[in-house]
Length: 308
Image (cartoon, rainbow, N blue to C red):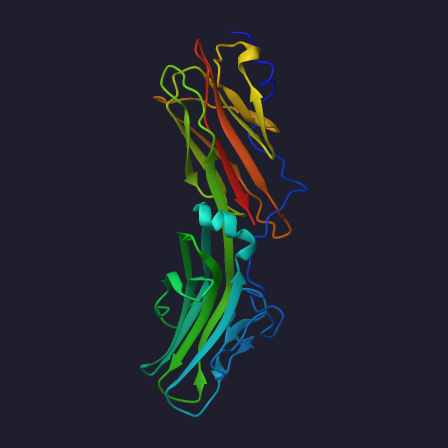
């Protein structure tokens, strides 16, 4: 089979230098400013930072000494505006990940309970969906949490709440550190064109979080030479004029920055890309498309992944 002129090189990873994505939407999520910059105390009942119990760096958030001795509640809050992403939110293509660390201290049976919450609110402040960690346990040790979920249409604000409650004493001794809130988009564009096994399809295997591995699974392959074309811009290039078995309606929807051969197993293939854990990256949008060469060549719809 002659090589297709568009499929002239292969690689196992993309060069991401110069592109970027905002990995943490929270300002001062790790308390490393040494104060409450970016956060508010909506109850006015006290919150601060501490350098004794930390998970990473030099500081963590700590309700500490506040209010009269006895039962007392503390809260620290930060709102993230999703209005600039309204189109993605309302199309159902946006997902959010909230992760971090918390610690509940216990002494002589008395528990200073620490917990976090994430609320997904509409423009009127109505909670459309929410995550709650519950009290961090086991006590007297740092616990990690991660929550991932789709962002409901109509969401305009992500509200992060740090919650502390004590039953006795004058200090609420629970702690919060290394808090991270990030979003990504993933969607398929176009319809592809069929080969011997139907229209090739791309499915999300693992989300494109910075510092993690973005993975795709290809289905409906027919045993031909399958390639994944990936790039940072869309296009609409008819493939029929190139021959190679492409029919009318077969279109390359990606400006290829790299093309990788994909070994198949029973009509499926896997692809993955390690994304740098670089908070300085911004605006990364990756387009990917399966191209399979055979007697009746086929292409999939385009998978578009975006981080903000």
